[in-house]
Figure 1 (cartoon, rainbow, N blue to C red):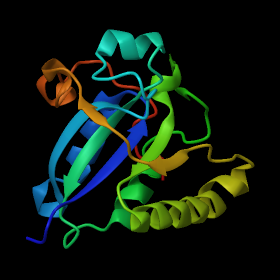
Figure 2: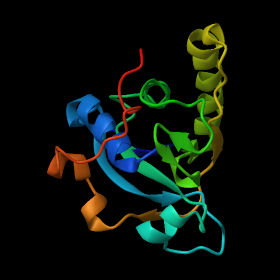
Figure 3: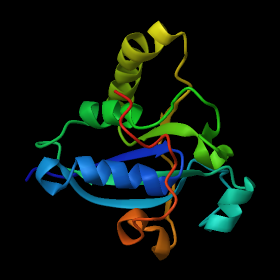
Figure 4: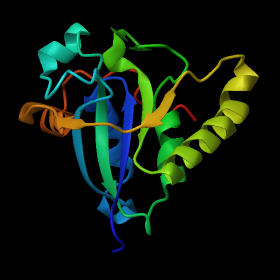
Length: 173
């Protein structure tokens, strides 16, 4: 195994985001470990909890932090999959989930990731969204502080198969 890399994506409710990535990229296909948590919020908002994030006061996104093996799966493939599995054309919303915590965002951990994320965004826009007359509104920004969500949120849909799942978390193409 090569040295693991980190990818961070926000695409609505973090339960569904984590669930679909883990289902499609088990360890044999490149994802080593995931965690759901909070990132991208106000600088003075440290170690937020779920209730505070949901209030909108911290402006954090619900996100998934993915540790992956770049020798097995490329960052390009993860970014494209991210776009396949939610609606990146809505601001602060996925299905019925509304608020800044449900925004579409890619939090990059290296300058190379930022370059790849922007390139793949342009490619996906041209191929899948421009023909429909819609525009990707996903933020691509440098990752800041990360806080793991409470334990009960981790791998939630694997532990609670009948739990709530946002209807946008599916394969769109």
